[in-house]
Length: 353
Ligand SMILES: Cc1ncc(COP(=O)(O)O)c(C=O)c1O
Image (spheres, rainbow, N blue to C red):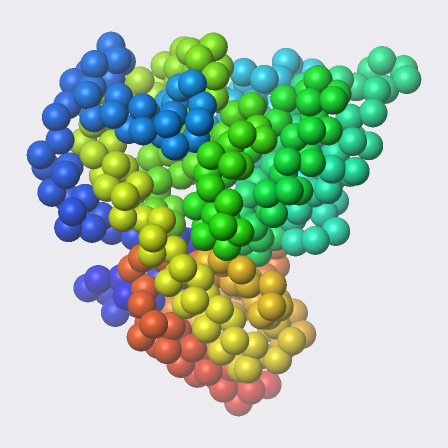
């Protein structure tokens, strides 16, 4: 429950408050000026992530969006294309930043399975243009896929996509905002997934529970250029070690407890499916994201979101569906409270016609 408000907040897994250990680590953090590269806590986080991902270097950044935008800017030239799934965060949910910052256009691919792409689809998308007009500079994939419903991509599928990209000489970038959630489901490690891509990012501020921050990883030249772009974008934060300290705790505390979030999401999905039959693909809920398609109720998602908020449950709307994410600050009791809010909202709609 969102402390002090009496609300259950399932709008995102970004709404968590820092844990006690994070707050202690932040208070005690050794810091320096990160623009000069001498914040020891930021450096420790970056070294740890480089080790964890098996990449040469890593860069601590304020947001996952900035990681994605910087990565695309490094890999893709203005006027060229980036291949991604049609609902990918990097292509669709970053306020058209790629157009403004990098002059990039996207070649969108339609997923047949909850946001996942196949190697065959990517292969077809990278076929040379016989008229030499379209140039694809990068393929980006998302794992877990958010709008797909938190879908975890099997390691073999990611490996196959990596091989196809390599055969075309096109780099592969992994938006692994929730890669640890994927690992908790597939049993693969972050290193396994990272080995298939030229570069990747993950967010500390989502399921892992840190208040701020994401980390980009890749080879040394990629990270050197990314660091230049970070400063160019005005994100040369100074004593960022106060935040990185929480990120280090998140890396230690976060991954082992993600299975709890997934179990809570499954229970939530089952409960909503009973209250609004047909709204939730319960079997498809693999991680911490639950979508409810309420279109069959005769009331749009916006009305449900407002009704649920009135009953003490905060949700978001994505693509006309109600979206809910479980996270560290909601426990099994909160799932019961959330389902009670769904029941009351459904009863009010039934009574009101
Ligand atoms: C898959 C994915 N990538 C990137 C991001 C962007 O992360 P941030 O909110 O830190 O900018 C999000 C945010 O929800 C996301 O879901």
